[in-house]
Image (tube, rainbow over all chains, first blue to last red; front, side):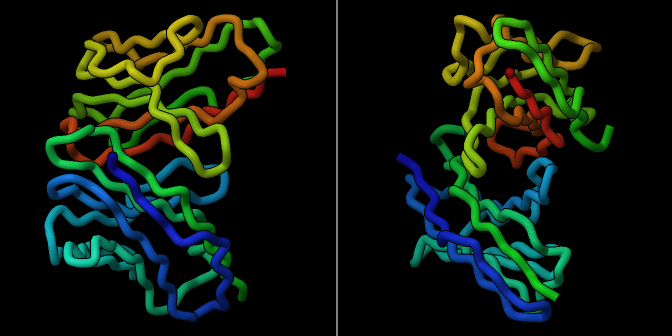
Length: 113
Length: 113
């Protein structure tokens, strides 16, 4: 079945550091890939998405590139802020398969001033 | 509206009492989904609707859980005779189509005492 694997957290960084959160996936066909963010006490917010190989999703300084050859969709940001502290979820929706997103287990990011 | 709205934000019920949660999807979205987040980072799919019709209820514990999406009314998720293990955050999401990205509401935190 479909699956999403994320690096375990928490990831702890100082403000202005470079962020990478790894995400790899297993899916049949060509899935659409997503990153969601959950701030404390809130719901999931769609951060960015990519629907085909080599697409780059970007939003609020975050970006991720759909790499079919490595089945990866790593999240990056050049300079994190304290306000980026949250839990980040990688997810996929498999084309031709279940339309219910398969979520990773989430990676907690803590950014210190 | 432009966001998925969920009410109430918090709900406390004694074991055996009924709980009812509400969700207003984004205007124009045809699909509504309900998820349960029990452990901190895991989402369990419960049920989905296409307009007012049940689309997929494979995740629903049918003995005590029921859900509706009626025209011109918020969707609802009802739990009869709540149990301690029903304590969780319940998220509603909506999307334009079944394979489109889902937009999540802020969640309802249900505490069963």
